Image 1 (cartoon, rainbow, N blue to C red):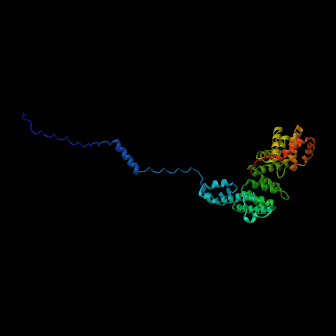
Image 2: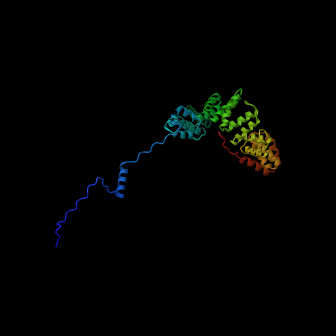
Image 3: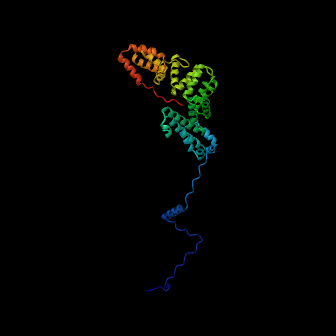
Length: 359
């Protein structure tokens, strides 16, 4: 091989480029390596726990209420409301334990009173009257135990049984305890006991009828209307009386239905309205009000329906409306044997309409 004289063998190695002070950039990691690092960091570094929600400004802590206040506030409540409130927090559950026990005793006492629970073996073999009296006393004992635990409903039932047995002072004591706790029936019964006192205390009765009626008790609304109509313990006002009669009638009180029918008939406290008067009179009769039955019978006779008129007059007589007896006898004599039998059969089959008045 021919070579030039200026060339050498082997050829010289090229020298490296001059050193630079700038740092060399590291190669960027691949996307898969980046994902691996993220998974690794998530595995070993859990996310921080969420911060607790701030308490709304001005929110009340019900668990800090005094147990006595919780107990008193729910003493007049029904068993389901007491059970629901007991689930609110541990403090309420502990405070309401006596009321839960009282509700169970009261419910069992009502079952015993109405003969839905078999009595002890010692009382089953006795005579009917003696056994029933034993069961009554057993129910009264359960009501008293529930009343001592603070149940206002048990106080009312204990008062009712004492009133029926002639122990009126004891009954009034139970009614007053229930009324002080705000029980509507207790307030109404206390007002009635003042009306029936000797001498009557109408002003005290009105004092208890008003809150009970305002709470929706239909019997208290009727009694308040009666006092307003007659001016007992309060200034007489036919307009206010009609207002409370109407509320009581809408709440299912049969006597108030009859009275509001009279208000609409004669325009006393309300605008005269024969249609509404007839409707309330018929509803009162359907529920078994003896005067309403008598008046419906008279109206039916005037309208020419003697068979139905005889049925209503017979029902009124059976319920103690003796003024209906004479008219009943007159119509009875004027009908054929077939129609007489039909009217009497209808009276035997008739049942009053069942309503559920507000307590």
